[in-house]
Length: 142
Image 1 (tube, rainbow, N blue to C red):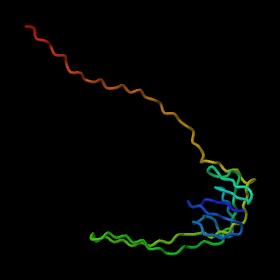
Image 2: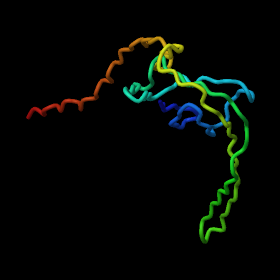
Image 3: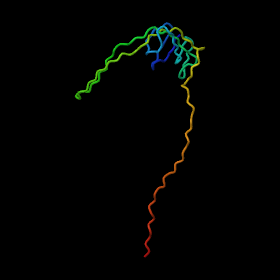
């Protein structure tokens, strides 16, 4: 059985027992976390694809450690303009281990974000500005 979850703006294919690094999660080491945003579940026989997520599905994981990723160097340069900028970056990561995949029976997750009540704005009738017409020419009487 495997599932595809989304966390940190990225999608991961997970199976029970898999260890992976995801973007930093605000939980302590040793705590468990549930990922309710499951995009796809395959149990070997049947595949459920969410629109955008599978309702009632969840993936449980245990947080193993928090760490920092490898350092990357960002170097920008514009030739012949004497512009150079060097910047480093290290991504904060959380190592998790997948403990369980539930296809149903979990907390019901909303398919979309909470909708705000629709408030109709008062319609205003705008008068079109009167177009100026050229004054009528007077005919000269002879």
